Image (cartoon, rainbow, N blue to C red; front, side):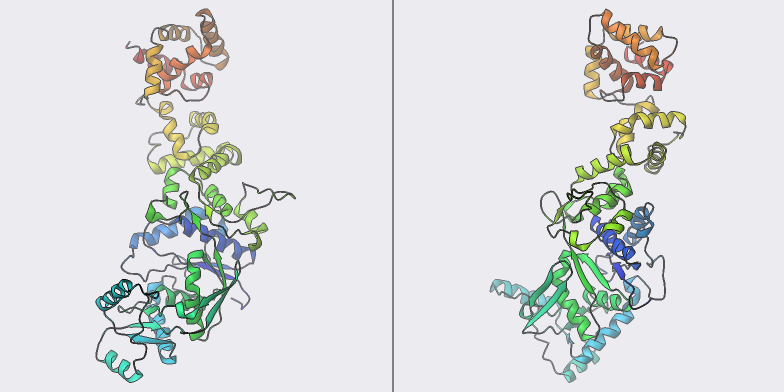
Amino acid sequence: MSDSTVVTRIAPSPTGDPHVGTAYQALFNAVFARQNGGKFIVRLEDTDRNRYNAASEGRILDMLDWLGTVWDGLKPDASPRKEDEFGPYTQSQRADLHRKYAEQLLESGAAYRAFDTPEELDERRKAAEARKDSYLGYDRRDRNLSREESERRAAAGEAFVIRLAAPLEGQTIVHDRLRGDVVFDNAELDDKVLLKRDGFPTYHLAAMVDDHLMGVTHVIRAEEWLTSTPIHKLILSGLGWSEPEWIHTPWLLSQGGKKYSKRRGDPSVEDFRKMGILPEALLNYLGMMGWSLSSNEEGVSQEVFSPAEMVEHFTWERVSLGGSTFDVDKLRWLNGKYIREVLSLDDVVNRVHAFGAEQGYAEGIAKDAYFRAVVAMMQPRFETLAEFWEKTPYFFTEDYSINDKAAKLIEDGRELLPQVRDALAALPDFAIETTEPALRELAERLNLKPGKVMQPLRAAIAGTSESPGMFELLEALGKERVLRRLGRVLGE
């Protein structure tokens, strides 16, 4: 890897279901790396052992594999599943390295040991809150311990953490690609813990050590990390290392205007996958969050675009700093647009069936000509893969439910349905060219609008008032099945 190679990374914490924000950051990191012929890596930040979730590690990597099925560029060049000479890419496996550099900071005076117990820290913090102190960080009482006393207490086995010795005066200036120079007063910086009592590093130390050793050139991450960047800059400076370029992307917001968060119940990537959102639609929508692709000279934004198009046209200048609202309804709409207009019918058939098999909908249902015809009829009528299966049980089983609205239509049309059944039974086949004139003639003969005939019929044979066109539905279900269902509804 040359000194000029662009290297980006995402560093999610395995603490639960993969966050939409992780996919968002992965997209922007991967797009920028691919645009510059660089390297995109995934590192798992698992040093918070209290929140660590072993199963989450695999789910994060599986999420990227799933999204990577529609864009190879999202497949990392290095990760816990694809180690190289800069690994390992699981942070807890690098603890010896982190301790080594914590000791280096200690030796240089850029950090110090603090022997406070958690109980002491909690008591002093509560006292500071009661006094309404403006500064509620660590009170630095162990910062001025002599080197000899610090070494003696550590050698005696007294538990300690290693803290950053942040400057007490002056300013630290962070240059952010999107925001320019951001100035932080050093008096407001905390002496953050770098190495915990259990010997594991905090994120602050581990991320900076690993970024440097892995050659990360651009740290592209969420806006919430901007306030931690002066700490990270001080760590790098204390180790004599140069900074990467800092790029803090705007927040994703939920529709309530707060930060999008799985802790508040906002859907995870896995939730969207189970809903039947297509990976390319999700990537497309995430690409629209805070960035826009202009489709013409007037600057009108293009709504449908691929990650490859994003790589071609992406510039940081088109990133908006205002938080972007993640609208699930808009994502569903975009997903439906892909189903209706972007994917071929064969692709939709394959996606629908594979999803049905994965989620348990398609048991015993073959991907045959009949299935293809059903998908073609429904293609304009569903926005997610799950919605297809929820709307179509009557195509594949006799054990379908009749909803309340359909039940009322059946009851209102009970005197009419025997005549409808007889008219259909007399037909030689159920081709559209046969059923349409027969049913329209029946309606005319009974002095009814055609809808008055079609509505109870649809309700009886589909259990719903919503379905494809009546005559397409009759042709698909076939004469035997339709007559059997009418007979069951009529109690015959």
